[in-house]
Image 1: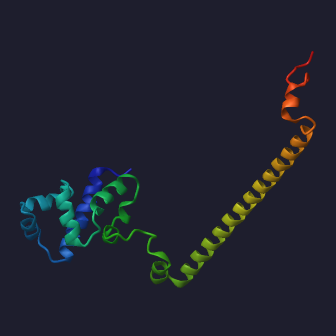
Image 2: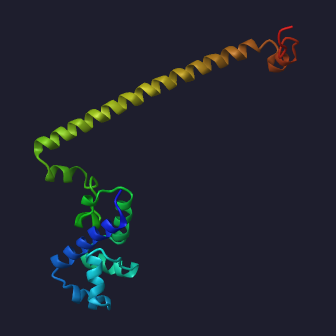
Image 3: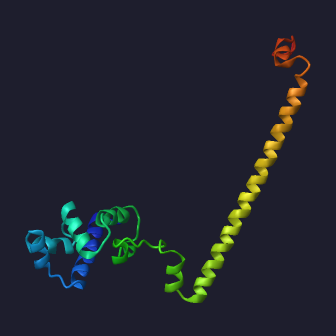
Length: 174
């Protein structure tokens, strides 16, 4: 499993790339946060972790979703591959959440068609399994109803109380 130090280093690289892509020097960013540029260097190298208020400023400055730094740390520590934690993820675009249009725009048409066919086949299998289960449950309900009717007709000669009061009910072999 991924360790905290690895995650900090990875997220630090994302912060460094984000600042660089926006033409923001670490010194200028440090001035904006009213702290020493060494703090920013520590974050970008994964040697320390920004405070929550600093995380909010980083997220806002880099156009990331609010809370994405903390969420990224939690996700990575609970199994999300570091390769999934990229600028798009931090901006709120999680893998697989872009919907069909993301798949169509970013993939080879043949691969897209095959993926959609496989997905449709899987859904059909799931539907068939559900229909089979529904049939089983309907049969169980019908059997229970038949049993209920049979039991109530057996007791109709005097009702449940009469059956309970009879000498043969509840007695074992003699």
